Length: 466
Image 1: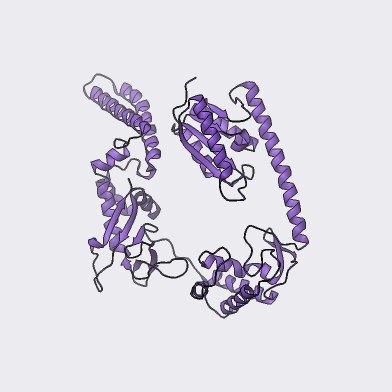
Image 2: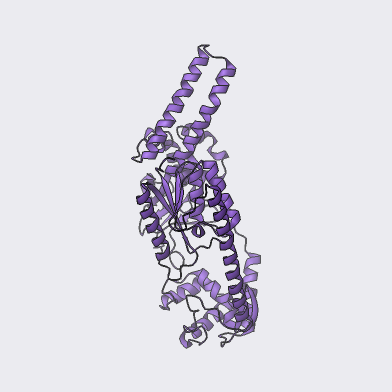
């Protein structure tokens, strides 16, 4: 059995109370030691920190590892223990299926050395997964029952951060913060926006519990939280009267909820109409630009204040800017430099070099096949039969290269910028955005000339992805 050239190290921990990632770091370290002992080459590390493998929640790095297995980017897997990989039997079977489809036969564990490719080893892996699932289920039921009991008794749910207005025991009212909260409620009910309230808090240097900046989302969560009216909430529902003194009345709490309901019913979010959302940076302060619609035009602006933190001193009209950047992207699609980059020719990565060679060979085979058919050396049936597996290899190789360079949105588009420009307007906005984002890291917008109507290209600096 061959030694993996690009093995994956997977690490996971369910609860990182300290938030330091030390648990997964130790797993990765032990897996790397095992790799060195086996003579395996580690291609990458896939770490899901503070994520349960039993809850069914998405594990982004686990999913990325499975995708890389499917695309042939890794050919072996190293895990500290099988319960770090999964705590659900169905997920174990899905993992085994992914290995089978990828034809990967090398999986090693630091502890509990289980050979999932042998009959006895597979049986033990399934037993261990079932036992881990039962252990997690039993623990989950005990914890859930304890939380429910605490809720019905009105005991506070103690998280890592104390609530604003209360001391670290989650019960004792903190007088200065409680007074601030009452002012927030009164001003909000009088019609003041949460953004204005956040700006007021910042201007008066009222600190948050964590010391971070005030955000409108933080304020909203505080205002609608029933605990401030003296209620204990469990699973989104009021379960009991809390064992602490309220800061506002029940009536005030209902008024807050009614006001937010009114805002929700009357507000209508406009459809997304901005191609460059999230990609623009202010040339004055470096902060991200935000979309801002006027009655007759669309703009990107630098916003100051809570949630934004910009200088507030720069704006640019959206339509000419979007046309300028789109034209630059379409032109770049036809450059030889980009073709070489995406084909892996400018990469020092050994895997990219191998894929580039395979890509060139498959392309050359197709050209030879076409020439043989044109010269009458083979029939139409022979040409079609021989072409299919070569085209399949070509597509697979292109997909693997795209995964390495993170440019899957550009598959099939490189070298076709001129043709794409003719159909650009027919693409939906999400597709246009994906193409631009695959090439553009960000765009810096410099200060403009006051009163100028046309776009000054000198204001626009496109920073391309490498």
